[in-house]
Length: 429
Image (cartoon, rainbow, N blue to C red; front, side, top):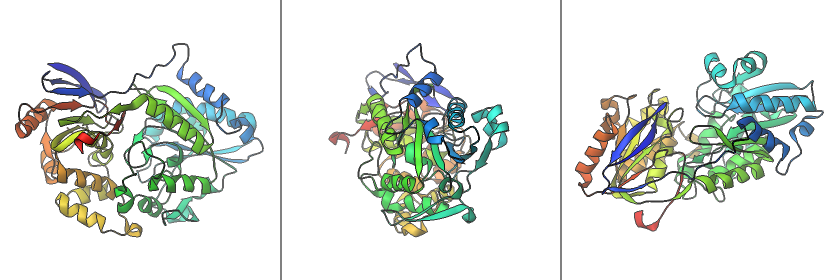
């Protein structure tokens, strides 16, 4: 037997695969952090070497209304490390600056006080002006016109009205935006619900270039970067994280150039070649990204790059918060995959239903593959109503998959499905 560990909730699961069945275990190249550099020092170094930008302290000079966009509790951005450094540099440039920190919830719920303390630390939570973005409050937004796709562009007024707008985040593969980070802090981070919905419409999600690792020609990315420009996003601090969620690299500077530099670093580190197989085991990278099913098309995307026709995909995800979205859950429970995909595809961009994009990706996958969901956060009845197969353990799921595919079936394992960019091959398509 070959043993590997896959990420699940806040821990790991040991998985045993018969040697004769194992095709490959896809893991990123090890991200080596120099022992002499702490995480804070990595961030400091990025700030002292801005990409196509003045240093932050110089940018902050004379700027009174400063806004920092930060990530919410569903993203593992180490803000307790990054925010104090950003705040220090801003105040070094202008000690009297009025600073607001907007939590970029996108369409997620707002953070609780306890979650803020856990993520940002007690001092920042108590002493800084933190606000939750609310995409449903129409009074908050400024209309910035029409984006390249024809979508509306509505961004939080505090971001638009800032004298200096900064965003912090982290870069990981993203299943339809290409990569997370950078411009995503603005759209969807602090955009209106209608703006986000239109950006994530069925036609955009179905576009062949709306895929992991692709920026150029990706219509979703192109709208996002244009929205960031219109909001006058001045600079970004983005980090890359290793498998333990520790900072392995950082970039600071002009939003598009710094983001692309970070994406290049990430691609070098986590790009892997597809290992086509009859059975693929994947995860959503563990907590916090596997806390609900809504997020899990990310890990699914890595499996889709490897799975052979009519294969079996096993997704291990804690889903401790359940489905993760009312609209997503309603859609997934409403109809069989073929019918659901037809319904979603017929929805005009301006009438896009929040969270339909995740249901769309799942429905499309369920039409072509058997998908077994290993989770303790969702009941068997709910899982099966959504047309997944249910298993209590990965071992049980693997037995089910072999029963479908035969004992000779090949198996590829992706321990962290959101931590790799899988380069597709012609063999599995």
